[in-house]
Image (cartoon, rainbow, N blue to C red; front, top):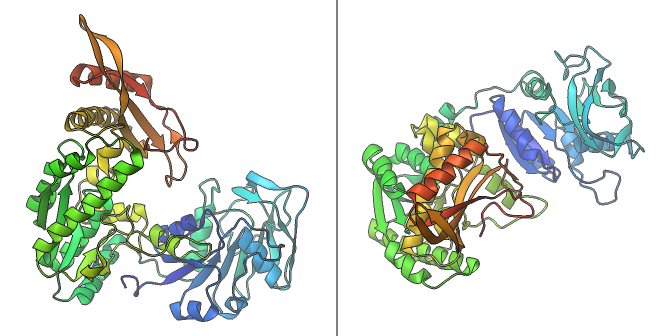
Length: 517
């Protein structure tokens, strides 16, 4: 593995919404972190040779009968442990303290009173530092050996420590940005208390990964489905850097790509990076299969199956293949191994290739499976990918086929391509692209009457949409400046022949979804 030579801090996940964020904050300190289920055994943890453990928050009440508990043996490993929110409570209860549910809860911002200036965890933290609270239960009695180092008006034991055993606990969430000095606390825990080496960076990851890929692949060939998205692009470049022409990429043009996208992918990866690239122009096949189809799920299934069939056909032209490369990221791995349930660890349809025949007998090669999305972008820059690709907004696997509401035709797709190009172009000109999680345009299955010049028109309607989000689970509509919307509407109606009306979607998720289909 690419992380074998780095110190490790484990995050035990109790079902917290912030577990991934905790791991990311540790990595921002230059220390590798890994999320494991709360019920990971002492023996399993010992084998990982972790320098420290962080117990995450969680939605449960520690006082309920079936609330999650870690293996009690972790407290005899002799390594530092930091409990956050639920993690503090479960540690306190298991070590002989007590937890209660007081009348006054704490949700939102609070200011801590530092009681003990000799605190290791709070070293350098000023009194009244702002933190983010989100808890109903609170520690009502601390275990023997602990001392109180900080409190708030509603929570006596806001931060506690046992310096001898190196156990620490905070009731607030240092991992969120609202905790002003939270990152400083995490850095103190990782570097000063755990004494972990801060040598985790994308430069070292590249070196380690190249070695690992070469050892795993040997002289065999690797196949990669290249979509032009960030994940598959970074995976392809990393593997190519390791094994050169032993990698062959298949790029399927389903006719539902953005304007000039096929040409850009071929130029960048084929001509610039000199990657072996198998190109399949399957536009006519996809359009024929979608003729007369309007139901969203039916379109997705047709596009997905035909993509797999096309990919399979092209793969057979590539010679003897031993490995299939996927742009799987760490959040996908976490989800599949969660103690709280999740999908099985399969080749997922939202990646480049899904549902491939089992008789192919390919081994999976997933060089990005230890990385979060922002780390993948950082890696992309390290490998020389242009910024416009590294920071590209998410784009659905079926492409514009799910944004062409109603029947998908070549004419409607070309219209939508032009609308999409103008929208993104104006967003970039306004300096807003990097502030938006995803921006998209939809072509609606309705027409409207318009007046363009002296001519009465009856043309299609498009909807523009831009959202902010952190993980796509929820999203809020982006407050687009009126002048930018005006420029978009003016250009679209003037430059795109088939459109005479422009709408802006202000629906959040929920109740809507980010995409229309």
